[in-house]
Image 1: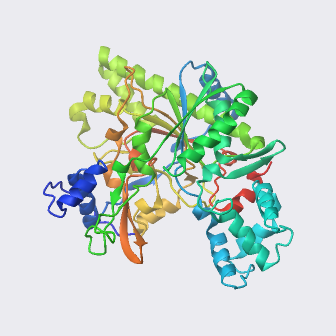
Image 2 (image 1 turned 45 degrees about the horizontal axis):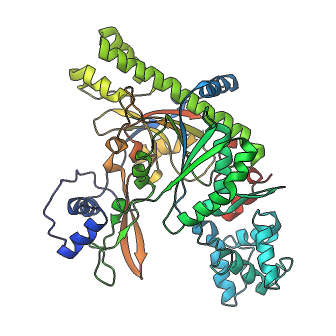
Image 3 (image 1 turned 30 degrees about the vertical axis):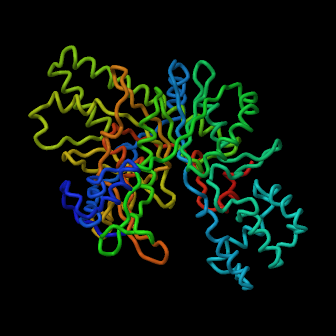
Length: 522
């Protein structure tokens, strides 16, 4: 990760680094040359580290709900006569899930004998030992039977190689290149379910409106979208019948206009063999554009791999409804304040709103804000709202909740990744190490304002919260740039409330062996 220089990136509109051919390529993707120049400038100057004041902890930024309070908030959602939408980012391939299996496949193909007792290969040994426990086992076994390969002989190198090739390869099940949403996660007596199917079931349980309609939106890569659409066509009737629901399911793809330039070691635009500019997907932060095109009173956001089998769903449903119920209560309070400000912005009202920000949102006002007290409070109320579930930190890699400094000098609740923080700074490292909670990406959101108009989500992101990473292509080193993360910088200027949710609602799948955990077995 590149060390950051916190200088401001000035805008320039000279386009001297791009040829006419380059400009035509950029414009064909919907990228302006000035935006491309800004990206190159960011590589040269860097992104500033996020300034964190303290971690958000229980009762100091993270709310804790008792079972009675959770049920009351869930009932608030049940009484609500509005529209719901479940937004699930599902674009990424599952290749990283199978990293160790790919390594074992390469070794076996060379004729080597992997040491399944070593730290690196131990997960592969567990994979073979517990092969029948995977939900996809029946499909794998049937495919191997056609090749006259018996899964029972997993101690044989030839069989091991055949199993890995059948599971991962394009000539077999193709799991090595499919997205997580299309992999079979859980086994039931009636058959196995993919991760995408589990999201359909969840939507029927907590995102169904009064008309019996559950709306879901998946983001998918262009090459995988037809497979998602085919799966939905095949399974939707059965789930509609089983859960008494009518599904409206839509898809979108990450916009090419959100791709970012890559640069070489000299921070010059990286070029492919044909001389064209190399652009790369801008990361999940690009999906704020997709989210911005959707509309519902309550939008649930959850990662594709964070799904549990039916026996664990009651907790998921209870707390997902509770998050949304709290969102509706919070939204009602904020809308009430905005209407009151329109009618009669009294000193008492302004004082009450200020206390609301400080006491309920852990908000720290910037110096000099009182010079336009009414305008500042009105602007801060008139924003998208999100209520985010947080789980206790049990060592999972990823982001967590902090009180962080905003561009205007205020400080508010934010979700930050470790890559956004200067962990070489002892005081920052101490704040990071004292964090108690982890971000499972479990949110209920609202971006309709108090007049019933949709807010433009692109106006509430912090462009200075992207990051730079090192990659390679065709044996050449390059630097890539990712846009502010979807639940990090892309939602930086949202009204944010954090709520502790039980660990039972969080069951991510980062490696294939995670599917062997009790949280993923019926």
